[in-house]
Image 1 (cartoon, helix red, strand yellow):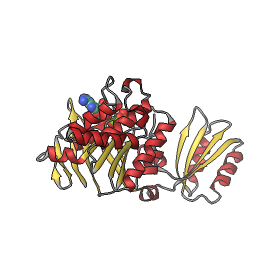
Image 2: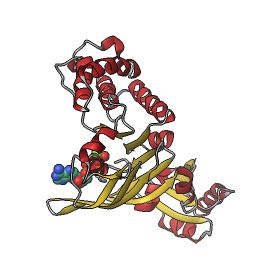
Image 3: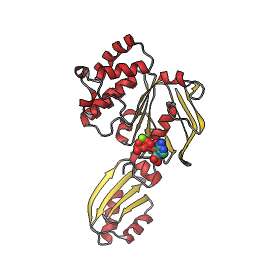
Length: 311
Ligand SMILES: Nc1ncnc2c1ncn2[C@@H]1O[C@H](COP(=O)(O)OP(=O)(O)OP(=O)(O)O)[C@@H](O)[C@H]1O
Ligand SMILES: [Mg+2]
């Protein structure tokens, strides 16, 4: 469905997308996960043909965005990060407007708008102005706008940021259902849970580069160790960190000196926690809190970059 081939983009001589490559199969839900400023929206804009790449190519259904932009735009529905609706128009009129923009006739757009209103759960608000809507309701209409022309590929750029939990769940369920019915989905987010819920394959993007790509289990199996033992100590101790680093089952330690906390990546869960506690008490330190975290994409990101996905 989509092949992104080594695309690059600079703004004011600063390269923000540095050779991104990935592909998405028909019917797949693909997640693009990365922190603020990673280059997700810039990548999405290039896929949709809203922004030209400096180099590389993008193929949608085998056709290049460079040579057949209008053909490609018909195949794609885009839900942009910033809500794009006419505030003084009703929900229905917004949908009809976007349907027309995507090439539907007035009659087709009218019929389709009723289906879409039903689908996004806003049929009872059809005639109300969008400016009176909550953030979550605006989002649902924005998603509806992208669905008007029944695209083959739905691309969503952080569609759940800043909305209430109920709308968030509604959106996630809607996207899951669309994908199960056969729509190819690209879902961009910095929320690991959403990407894990929706997507079978995931690309992790950071500072303009794809730093990991694969299924969730592929990615988690790449973690050195996997489980993280998080402990809070009565006080921070460099010598404890040095002692722990000597233990062969410990892969990596991230220290938070101010909070006297350690995040310890272990290769096998076994009795790692017990050994860590006894190493601490051998130095007269008290373990005040202890938490075991199973491997996930957040841990992988931390391990690859030394930073957290969310700031
Ligand atoms: N039009 C522009 N002009 C200059 N710099 C830009 C422009 N658009 C994006 N950037 C910069 O490019 C980098 C990537 O931005 P982008 O919006 O693609 O990130 P993102 O992953 O979508 O982040 P977020 O999660 O915050 O939406 C950022 O450093 C941003 O400041
Ligand atoms: Mg963005």
